[in-house]
Length: 85
Length: 178
Image (tube, rainbow over all chains, first blue to last red; front, side, top):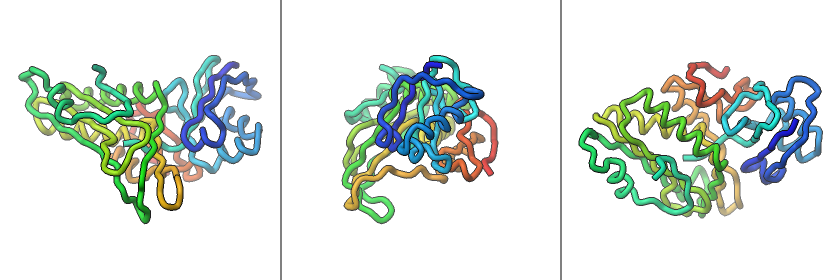
């Protein structure tokens, strides 16, 4: 499936702003599965997206659970907890 | 003019409040909150703040928050302005203003919107201190503030604590993160 991947704040600094990605999920296409797959792509990804780190997910610009399914063409963003206001 | 604005430039609080009221005569109360850059946090001096956001999602998220405020309180008009980019101590960051028939709805909707924005709007602050630059940590107290409205939030929680980011704006459940 084709996904538009985005990173913000500390994740953007570590991994860049993101890119369009062709991803073939091994199992159910969830945000958690994508995160685990990304962790296997490089040491930088493994560190920035490590399971112990607080990372939030938005799917199509709406905050989502990591267990939420991804559809082909989705925009998926990973970022740290928000600190606006 | 849109009621949700993300911008680098400052805003004029008086002009915004006047515009919110306009020529309407059904508005009996206008409550507003202005957030400013503190020059001192925890142990360090802060000489500047850099604010990043997620263009598109930010506007959608805040619009949805205002829509929720409208279903909960008697909101007649609202405006949210949030600045991004580089800001200095003393500068204004955010304005939330709500007009209602009576003060209780105006006060409550204003506080509700700020509590929601703090935990669910995709902004990130980076402080410049004598020790260098660092990203600001999310605060558990902000999640607790939103919980008072019956909305779950695990923004500051970590996955290892069992907390999972809730579905956010669609979620209206009083779920507790263990």
